[in-house]
Length: 176
Ligand SMILES: [Fe+2]
Image 1 (spheres, rainbow, N blue to C red):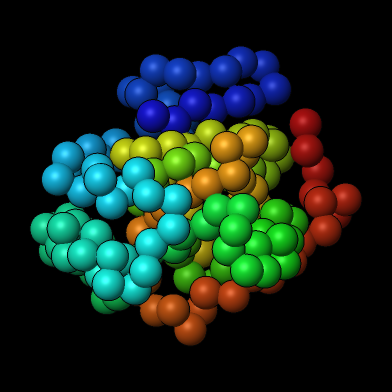
Image 2: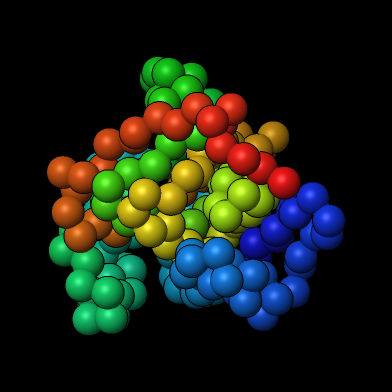
């Protein structure tokens, strides 16, 4: 379940979190992952066949989201401290950036932190298992792992050619 950290307050109540994120133009839902996937999800690393097994187990969710939002493709990202090149990978996304396509993540194991600067407000969303978040195109954000150093997330795409970070200098934004 997500938590939100604003300068003035922390939000832990799901409906308040949802309302706040929607007010910022983001989408947020909480979806339980099927228990049948728990054994695989508990593994730190997954081979390609295991990743495919998880994506198949979540096909019903993809079908539903396809209908609702018109996503065309999905894949599974598995990040932990033993992934080769993990620091370089994370360094690409822990700086403020936006994409020209929507960034959609469904967290199915582990946790991480999305940071945002939207409408002059800087805030963080700590995401974990069950959180589904959609960041619209051209929205300033960053992402880092937390102390647990581990996350599994399904990414949904409408068009993955637009999914390249465009970096933004925070100093050029006015933050109150
Ligand atoms: Fe991003």
